[in-house]
Image 1 (cartoon, helix red, strand yellow):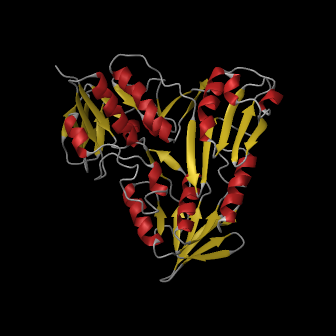
Image 2 (cartoon, rainbow, N blue to C red):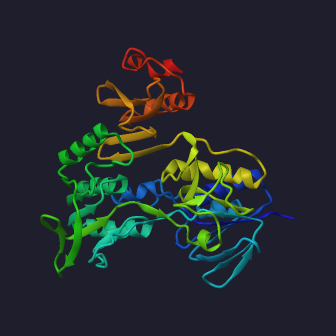
Image 3 (cartoon, rainbow, N blue to C red):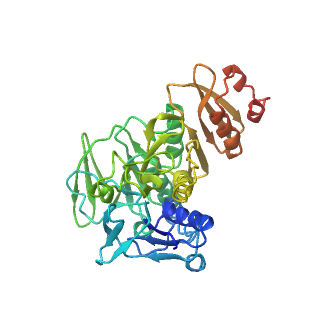
Length: 403
C-alpha cells in the first residue's frame, strides 16, 4: 500500500520536501496543504525583484503547476489546516475535511511580527511576508510615498533599498544601536549604514516608536524625542514561528518546533521542516537553533524526507544567508561575531571578513561582492582547522590553499 504523506505549508520548505520525497519514493501519495492561493514560492525575491517590478515569476515560482501534476504531488491551495491529531494520524482543514496520513510534515514557516503600539491598524501600516503583501506594497511604492521602515534588519533594509530605487523618500527606524545587529559584526553594520546613507536613506538608530497617529493625508510617527511625518509605514521587525498547530497537538515547542537533526519531532510520525523547526546547531550541537534563511528551507527538508523513508541523513550544513541591497551582495557564513578575532582580506571592491577563535579556527565569515570565496570559507569553517591567524591576512595566499 502506498505511503500517505501530508505536508502542511505550501512554501519553499514544503515544496522541497515533496520533491525529495518523490525522488525517494515513486509510489507515495504526497499532498501539500497551503492557506494561500499561490503555488509554492520562494520568499527572497519578495523584498527585491517583486517590489522592483521584475515580475512575480522572477525567481519566485520554482515549479509550475504542470510539475506538480507530472510528479503526482497533490496541492490543496486556499485550504488551511486547523487541527492535527497525531494519535489518530489525521488532520482537519478549515473546510471541515479530514485526511489521514502515515507521515506528517509541518512546514508552516513563520509570520511577520507586528508592532505592539497604538495606530498599527491603519491600512497604510504594512507587513511584508507574502506575495500578496509584496504586490500590495509595490502598488503603493509606485506613488513614491514618504516611507518609514520600522526595523533595520534584513527585510527592512532590502525593502528600503528597493523603495529608494523606485524613487521613494525612505526613513529607517531601528530600535538598536546598529543595523543587522543580530547577524553581523559591528564593522559590517557600519558599512551597511554607510551604504544606505550614500543612497539617501535617513537612518534613525536607538529609535523608540511610541505610537502612530493617522490623518486622512499622512501618518505621524511619535518617537521619544520627535515626530516624523510619512505617507506609508513598513514594519520589518522579524518573524515568529507558526507553531500553533504543533502546540495544540502537544508537540514539544520552544520558539519553534523541537526536532532532532533529521527533523523528527516529539511525536512519532510527525516532522518539522524549514524555519519553523528548531534543531541542533551545526556549529555546536549542544544548543539548538531556528534559522530563517533560504538555505534552511532548501536543504533541511531533504533530511526530513530521508528520515520519513527510514534513511539517516541529518542536516548539518554550516549556516549561510545572503542579501542584495543596491549593487552590494553580502553573504554571511557560520557565526561571525564581535567576540571573535577579525581579519580583513580586501581586493579592490571585493572584501572578506574572517572571524577566528583564539586557536585560529574560522568560525564565521562575511563576504562583500565576493561570492567566489563562499565555498572555501564554508569548507574552512566546517573543517575546524587551526592556523596562525596572521597567515589569513596574506592576500598572496588564496583561501583555498588553507584547505
